[in-house]
Image (cartoon, rainbow, N blue to C red; front, side, top):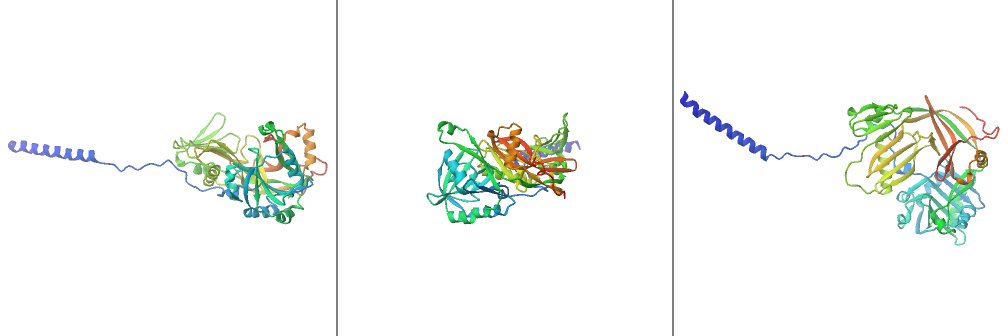
Length: 460
């Protein structure tokens, strides 16, 4: 037995060593099939609001009709005249673009004595976006970055309709030729606005560097106020709060990883360790933040940035109410802060300072969305309204002067709805928004102070 045990052990040892060599060789030569892991991407989830396209968010704020003799009328979003003009814009095309700085005399002639139609936007819209509303024959983007007004006017001496493209932001004016016939301007376009409420034209003249270099050149910021007192409605709305489950499911890739943190000041933070949502105590608005991925910076046009912000909102809660593009503030070649303003019909909504209940603000960096600020209040339906009379231009200026406001410093005034969220419902009150040097200065109750005029009519 002993004679066979030693050879057996030797054979078994050789076998084990051989197996060990084979396994080691297999491990040494094994090439695993690695898969590249892509950065996490957001996916569309159940949205509270609706998706929108760029053309639904970029629309004129108003159409102003100029008849000479300092007579002006205005159509807004809810007016049939507004819809007729905006439906005709795709038939307009422009060519031969030239810089066209205006003197005070030229501004005076344009605004007071020349017939024309003015298309107003609420802020500078990228030229490439405007080119989808009208047709440019030539590279307009070399002339200017954004357009706030398109002003068709009749040059009587030449018998030609020209167009001015105006940017308040860059204090720039470009003139172009157009195919619009003088007869069409007079009989088709201007005839639409004849019986609309008359407006008083107001001017704020900026003291810019061009004006300092050449006193003959200047830039006018123009706004319009109703000549007569007019009616407007005040609303009470039911609203639906956006729940924590809805925004967690929408903004986080894996809601099961989200934890809740309460700061000492009552601020609520929801985070998965990477992205976060912050809600300050007593506010019904959220701030979402996400770090930009470390990758090669993507160069985007302003139109690209606008489209990227719209696509992100479409995928994350959607558009809960009526919003329109308000502004685009560039931050480098691939960054921007883009704001969309809530509207009720033709009028923008404003809320108390520090409460982002009236806007959706998207911030991009390196071509990626890194921050979103928006309201958690979704207006539902109104259950009550009052018809009220609002101040005319004359009464408004008398009121401002009585409050010792220097009206020469006012750069813009417009009607809006002031939003105030109360337990169970929201108030929307007609208000005048007063801007100085292009920034918000004051929000004023718009109802007339003249006895009998501001009386509330017909509580429904």
